[in-house]
Image (tube, rainbow, N blue to C red; front, side, top):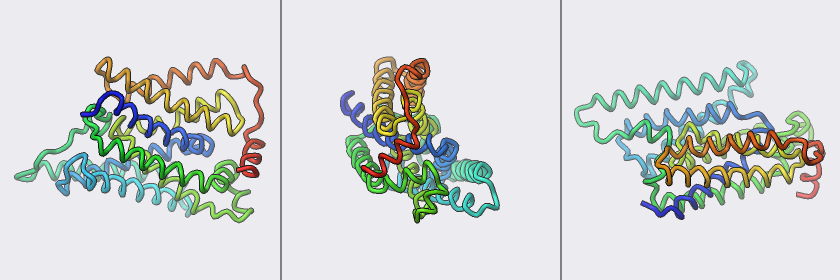
Amino acid sequence: MLSMLEILSAGAAVALMGGVLSVFVVTKRLAFVGQGVSHAAFGGFGLAVFMGLSAGTLGFYGVVLASCVVAAWGIAGIGASKKVDDDSAIGIVLVAAMSVGALLVYVRSRQPNPGIIPSWEEFLFGSVLFVSGAEAIGAWVVCAAVCGVVWWVRRKALLWAMDEEGARALGVRTGLVRALMLTLLAVAIVVSMRLVGVVLATALLILPGAIALRVSERLRVVVVVSIVSALVGTVGGLWMSLERDLLPGPSVVVVLVGMLLVAAGLRGVWPERSLDVSVDEGVQSG
């Protein structure tokens, strides 16, 4: 078991990823997509349990991550085909993954020697008290990789998020950018689920960006406020969870929702500029 400082440090890595990606999620209205990808982790959970993999092992997380990535690409592919709208594509992937996962867990539990089947509650809401040192280090490694990729593709990703048709006209391969961003969302969700759970991990991809856009519409300010909000919400929620013996995921969400309500009350205090203008400046100077 890690110390409180080490647990909060691991939470900070998760929050940093969420804060960076949240700007794109909110701007591009990918909240429901993130929810669909997170629920796809249930399919990976069921498959990992069916394979007899122990919870917390690299193989277990690898199967869950693969499930989320396949789901993300599936959503992107179905949506791009124009035969099914995005909401329907997300719904199809969501219910299919959850159903397959539940069936696989059930089949495993009916076997003569099923072994130790991980708790659904732990998977849903996280288990911050049992985070290992390796998992904490891994969270920071993945955080650095995700943030590095976002920085590398920031110009194209911002154009895609603000105006997909315009980005396509400028030669941006929007399908590739979409698949990449959805893959990063899948990675962030899988890394986050150990601390706050797979369902509530999506809150870290939505609420920080929503808070930031309540405070300002200038791109650089939005990015900074989103990251700070994610860090404060995650660290504050985890601290409250540890101090009061509460579930970590709901604690983080409660803090973030409280911050959103405060930010909503502050809207209009500072003069704002159009996010479109700020994006153009960011692309030219980035």
